[in-house]
Image 1 (cartoon, helix red, strand yellow):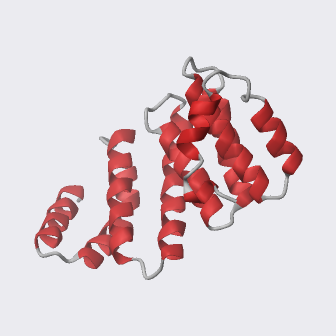
Image 2: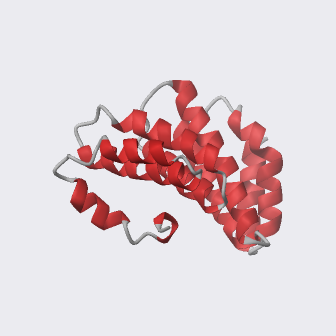
Length: 177
């Protein structure tokens, strides 16, 4: 069955029928997920394709962001369920924090920011830990939790790399006040 879906999908791509392809893929998601040869990497690629199709077809920025958040939640849950470190995990968490802040889902941004901080705290690369803390602090700030924001920044402010990391992220529009 999946082979015929893939063939139909290729045909729709060749005919530039993006909306029909999106409808097909959404209808067949469970068949992809439960296919015996499915692996997380394939699923993440499918999710990236869906995100691109959403970008092309969403009627508003808010609709697009909500769909990306939904797809990323699924990707994150799958990686966590398998209990192994996937190279995309950190990037998915970072994107979720940004997107949740962007549309005002501050509690969710904090949740993903905490996961990101927990993931990076024991890594040798202190820059990752600093970036994670800056994102979490911004989520706390947007949620009005200023004491938590301050304590989060304080936890990494003495790292020698802090100033350089702050220079990289200070001009990101979503992080500005």
